[in-house]
Image (tube, rainbow, N blue to C red):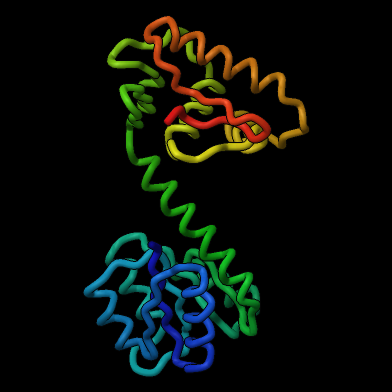
Length: 226
């Protein structure tokens, strides 16, 4: 479960945010001053910090500095300031994103989801290898192997397809999602190119093992075989 630290001295706004994120199955912790936020940050890690700047006690800017001394927790600043200079200052101060007040709850939810995906993705990219049931993808050497035996002549797109599937082995990916990840361009509705690459990956895997690693989910797309 993802955790959110809501740092906002306006009780109504703080409660509104807590209610919205709780409904979305987030674990919410509330702070109503900069001092309280600093204490909580010293004891816990959070998936995202929602941070008002104008706080009693320690300022939001000082809380942001505290966060940055403790790692790369995503911080979304809530601010009434809306000039370009103010926004630039917020981002240069270490914030990952900002939302100007008044705001829509749906926008806050969406921005939090984006930051969580980015943070998880950056942690995932630090791993040099992905592994699933004997299938290994080595990012550093651009190599794919099954139980230590390398697959021959893996292309850039084949490598990217496997990388996406292995990052989320239980998820069914649509053809659109796979195409846009592997080719880094918009999907135009043509599936033959992707299907051919999936077929080629299967053939290369079959040369070294009888195990099926990629499952076709008819009408949707592909996933790793459970």
